[in-house]
Image (cartoon, rainbow, N blue to C red):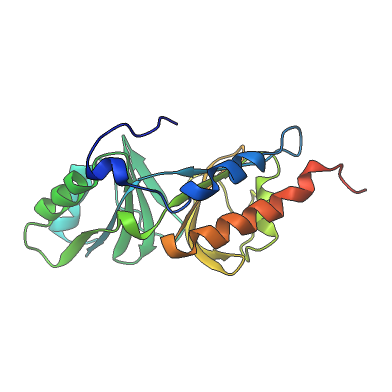
Length: 206
């Protein structure tokens, strides 16, 4: 991942887990029981509230190029945007686009209708846990049934991992997961995951 080279305020930005970058790298396990942990910095996140049956929702879907998911656990993706269902009238918009532009675009699509589009990019960070043992690591402290029959690529829900509340999103069937904890709890969650990964360095116990 490229280092920031800008000057000014952007150059001063620090992710909630910048201080654990080397520890996460050192925790990497390779082989058939492999698992990796990395931070995805500065993902744009916008909390969206709107009546899904309204004309404003139609305008938002056209602006994003993706439908608003209508069921718990569902996501939809188009280009740089992924929409995660949080509630009957609430979504988290994740994007690689610049945060101000996304929030402004959504507010323009609302056009004064009841609802809101609030930039919450600084409220959370994104951890990516992947590899053959990733599901087993999560199962040590997540109450969800993560077996592929119940939870697979494209699914995302609010849950807990260890004692930390986070949005858990399965990206692919490697499996790769992205976890979105509040920034103030990210350090605890990252250290919990590093500890949970450590046993996979050794041989599997029969």
